Amino acid sequence: MRILMRVQMDVAMANAGMRDGSLPRKIQMILEEQKPEAAYFTEFDGKRTGIIVVELADPSHIPALAEPWFLAFNAAVELHPAMIPADLMKAGPAIAAAVKKYG
Image (tube, rainbow, N blue to C red):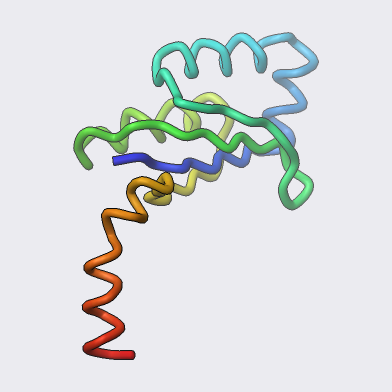
């Protein structure tokens, strides 16, 4: 299952990591381990934020995705299932059934 992960880093920890040079190295290390489909870095709510798309084979792998960010950056991590257009097309019959039943 494709997961969109939003990682918001603690400002003080990220600032310290920028000052000592560890932030970019730690991010690179985590991304090499997680092998994301895509990774973008921006600002949300005034915090350094990563938007990372990964494939999750099993829910038991959630800690392997979240813990490195928690531990390295005291980050807030959100995980959201995500679909590409082909996934949405496959969902068409289930959407139509819900519309018929509830809509």
